Length: 392
Image (cartoon, rainbow, N blue to C red; front, side, top):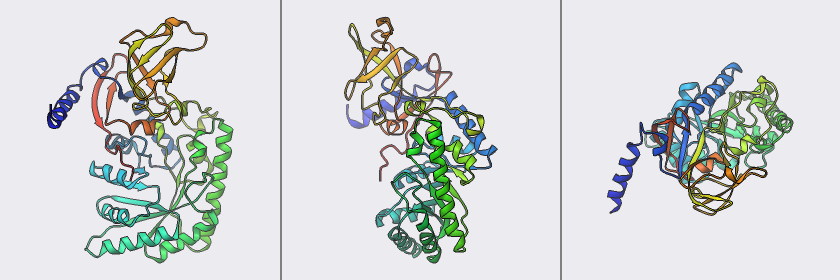
């Protein structure tokens, strides 16, 4: 079989899944529990509305135009991405309001960014004088050929992540530079990635308060210079509740809430509804037992089927633990104290809750989207991972 025939055969097999029972999904496969995911979307959208905040979910989590469209239909103003190529892929698939919440420095990429700004509502983050200067050069060069567009430029401040962003006191200098060059200063990017995975709710709350204090310090400098700051955007799935009540943010950027994963499930939930709704696991890797020993079972989903940077997946609703079996295999053993009878039989389906949803998604070409639950549900759709492999 040649490559074209293989591709046609695969496409036929995929299209025939729609309407089929969950059992028809071949393993290993990335599967969305659509009922759970839609409940997650509605809960986050309602929370943002109730708190008077804009919602701009992070599409780096799902890399899917279909899911971004559902988020926007539920009330999101648009989506965030981390890479220019993600923005291009989602724009090609019909998403029209995108914020690249990251720095773009390479001149060739900035030329692409300017071209993209003619097609969609676009914004980007900066955290350096050089970044702004190169952006201005690309913007002016792009305007020569007659194109017209508007680009929002956010100044990223470091609120404790220790990654990108300038100190709050330095934000005013970059804001001045943006305005002086005739670009639109869109506001502040203030995201604290480390805060999302602090296990204790009180730890996350304290970190969110510190982030809010950094935002206020940056705002004070900018407003004292006579520059208006239209928006402060940031927050994430682990901190959005604290960010919302802290009063510093106008827009939230949670991503993983749409799927959740094992790592987020390990976080202690804050007390009180004011700090946000609970979300359900909605993304799974379907696997099958392909070998069985006396004290273990082996499934066909190894490192190539799920990311392990945040630890192994959770074996869903079984008294089993997952151990590293290499690229193509996972080893299942009974939990301490559980009977050997907990082991699944040869050929059984085993559902895995990934340790980290974002990089797991990037390992797959498509989602099998299931309505009616993992056991007994039917495949409602097959969605491409539109921005899979978009790393540039």
